Length: 215
Image (cartoon, rainbow, N blue to C red; front, side, top):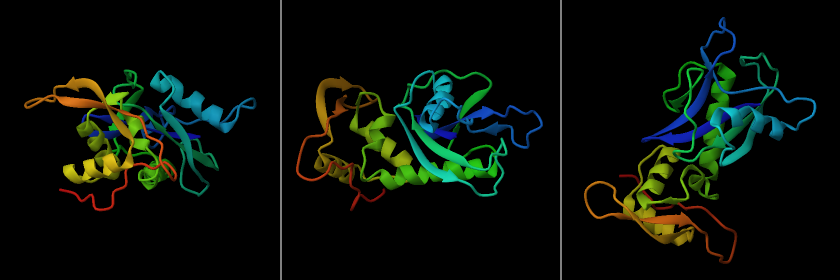
């Protein structure tokens, strides 16, 4: 199992990497990875691998795909099961010298199969973004609409038009206002919201982006 842990740091989406266990390894950094033990499922093994690095269970941990090509892997494993873990902003534990967060678009050299796993994880997250409220997994329990838009922009890799985004958000019925407000620099304080989807006909969806153009 290879775990792609994602969390926002500032205005960047970052991935957790650990130092290679073998000092002779070609790449100095790698995704957290391990093989399942005889007494655990692969999902249990993935949780075991990622939990000590994060200091807690991630907000989401799901399989991405199996990677069985001939691209090099740090452990020389024949098959890798890629997982994506989402960590809410500010929830990641402080890291020591053996682990660090790197911007997803500026990763240091990692083994070719692990690079493919990172790309596969990002593709899987973006493919589900319109249909599942994944973005809320990267936020604290209450947040401003500007914070939520920033998360969507990080995951999509593009800017969104503020007014169009908020129309799409309200049409999705996924958030409700709280009685709390937060200062965001100059100007009026911003109201805090929480994830609270209202029941309606049809299946629950995330924010739909038809017509939400960039700026």
